[in-house]
Amino acid sequence: MIKVFRTDVEHLQEAERIIRLLSRIYPGSKINFDLEDKDNILRIEGAFFTTQDIIRCVGKSGYTCVELPIVWS
Image (tube, rainbow, N blue to C red):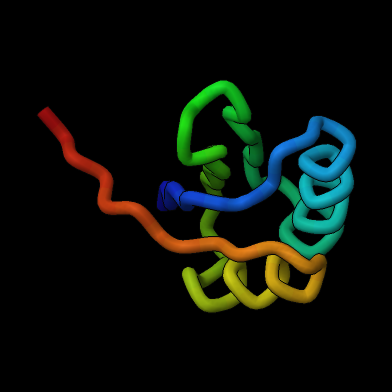
């Protein structure tokens, strides 16, 4: 499953910290940020997480996170 989120994470160090946290909780998942996008995108690909899990983890780190719809063309 692939999920994409809009976040308020703005700096690379913050993004790297969240990636490390999520990688420990969801090993084997592919996790990355696109901080050049206006929505500071967090993208996660894996099998063992829910939208609410990700929102909660990012929120506990002090940031907001909102799922965005994926449009397949």
